[in-house]
Image (tube, rainbow, N blue to C red; front, top):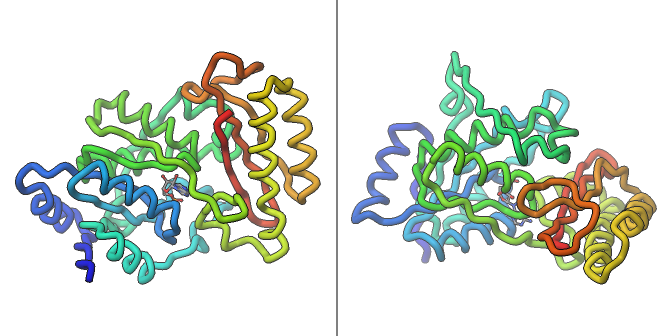
Amino acid sequence: MSRSPMIARTMPALRRALESLRARKATVALVPTMGALHDGHLSLVRLAKRRAAKVVVSIFVNPAQFAPTEDFSSYPRTWKSDVAKLAAAEVDLIWNPAVKTMYPDGFATRILTEGPATAGLEDRFRPHFFGGVTTVVGKLFTQCRPNFAMFGEKDFQQLRVVARMARDLDLDVKVVGSPTVRERDGLAMSSRNVYLSPQERRAAPALYRAMRDSARRMRGGGDVGAVLAGAAELIAAAGFTLDYLEVRHAETLAPLASVKGQPARLLVAARIGKTRLIDNVAV
Ligand code: AMP
């Protein structure tokens, strides 16, 4: 039987727990999450276990990264099943601070990032988002002082933003990206997929299919503009409204007119009904 993870909810409890984990200089990997855990999150945990002796998973639905119009209060919260999954995965510590612990009265600091955070992708549609993410991830890094931190390629721009921030602020943590885990029909796993109606859920895999086929055509020498136009049509025909569909440099996220001779990534955000989905593939 797997041992239950320690659970810390206050800073003193976190410090005590980390001290016991770090005995004999054990390395620590952190997996930041907002809970509602699925196999995508658990793949990050498995990667963390391969890289470090001890694994900490944070579960914190971060109000700072939601706009007032977004789904902070209705975001799925599944604490009991999350703990069971993390126990089965043999995680050592769950860091689950209250909002007031993370943002006590008077909290007045925000980490502002440029570069990948102002690439004109998610930031164009969710202008509050990366400031909230970097502020909370910066705090998680200083609270937990991990040697490694695992982030999903599913949120590709976020991965680039966090890696840049860690380097820029000398946070001495290795940010590690991990491939997107998908449902059998190709839909990228996401805590927000529960918002999809049965009909939307049936339509949703069209997004990945269009992305995968477009990437293949671009690699085969297809004209980027023409391939993107075809993909946009397919995505719209499946019932989505596009926020963006773009090819970017995989490291800098700079716009690319051609994918020849450079690492490229195809990124999409699209809305279906009340749900906004994002996805990306290597080109
Ligand atoms: P979230 O709980 O949605 O904030 O996600 C926490 C972490 O899990 C982030 O680093 C995400 O990129 C990652 N993640 C979410 N969905 C997936 C997925 N389908 N495959 C791989 N990683 C994922």
